[in-house]
Structures are given as C-alpha cells and as structure tokens.
Picture: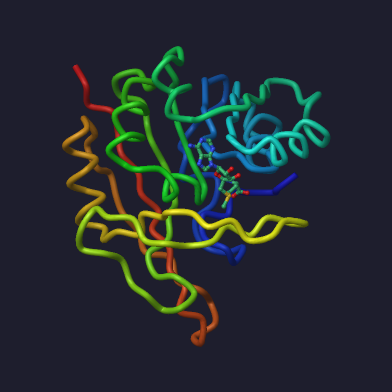
Length: 203
Ligand SMILES: C[S@@+](CC[C@H](N)C(=O)[O-])C[C@H]1O[C@@H](n2cnc3c(N)ncnc32)[C@H](O)[C@@H]1O
C-alpha cells in the first residue's frame, strides 16, 4: 500500500492532502490500477472508496492485495460509463489515468458523479519522456502503456496545455481551483506532470 498519493512519479511534491478532508466521505478513484492509492485513502484517511479500472489484470492484482480492505470496493469497467451511473461522490481523484480518456467524455461524466461542491483532483502528463510538451489543441497523441509482464500497449493519450484543461473544466461545469506543474527532481529528466483540481459548480 502507498504511504501517500504520488501525483508525479518521484515520491515528492504534493501528496494525499491535495484531496482535502476525506474522512467518512464517498470517494471515487478513476483508473485505480493495482489499487495502492485507493487502499491508502480508505485505510489511512477513513474514506469510503470505490476504485475502478478497465484492465482485468490490474483489477485482479488490486483484489488480490486489497480486496478485503474495509471501506474499499473495486469495480471492473469503463470509468466514464460507471461515473455516469454512479451515486453522488464527494471527491473524485485520478492518478495518471484521465490522460487516456477523451476529456469531453470523462469530464461531463465526472461532473454528474459529483455532488455540487464536490472536488475533482487528478494528475496527467504535461511533458512526456521524449521531452514533447503539451498540445495546444484537444487532440490525442499516440503513446504506449507499459504494464508489468505485458508487451507495451498502443494507446491514445491527451497531453494538453493547462489552459486547455482549464477551458474544458469550465465548459463541463467545474470551477478550477489550481493547476500545478510538477517537475522531476533530477534536472536531466524532461517529464513534467500537471496536478489539477476543480470543484463541481453545477447548481
Ligand atoms: C498509468 S495507470 C495508473 C494506475 C494508478 N492510478 C496508479 O497510479 O498506480 C492508468 C490506469 O488507467 C486505467 N484506465 C484507462 N482508461 C480507463 C477507463 N476508461 N476506465 C477505467 N480505467 C481506465 C488503465 O487500465 C490503467 O490501470
């Protein structure tokens, strides 16, 4: 289980506190992977966490390690379909998963899954390992997902400028709280991430 949420990749920078107070609250982890952060948020923060991932392999690992965790339920499926149908959440978060989903699909569904005033906190790539910075249009680029014991999986990825995330969030019913750029601690590493938070402003 993780000790804190690592929104970047380097074990430093903002941690779980970026979620705000979640004790006793309903929380959704989108693209939970092996469940390490969902287990942490349920156990260490006392939240009621639902964690969803579309990969059967990742979900199997998550259930194997954290399936009996109090306050934590895992769901296998598409996060957008699930969020559209989900009961209201206080907080939705996602660590490096929303970049794989068209934001014009994900953001309206997340807004519908949040109660008014509920928070969305997520991290996405800003600059990739090749040093390619964010796009100035909401178009995906080709990338690869590397999962343990699997050949790399070709995917589309939205690596877009902070101003575009801001525009998208506002368009889909969020007030933007902040967008922070997280840089690798070693100067030679070009990877940067965005940590984005917003509040559902739907009346
Ligand atoms: C880079 S991994 C991050 C996993 C985890 N959040 C972590 O940081 O350890 C991205 C995850 O998003 C999941 N994912 C991508 N698209 C998804 C979708 N539409 N619905 C649910 N999960 C999705 C993938 O299966 C993968 O496990």
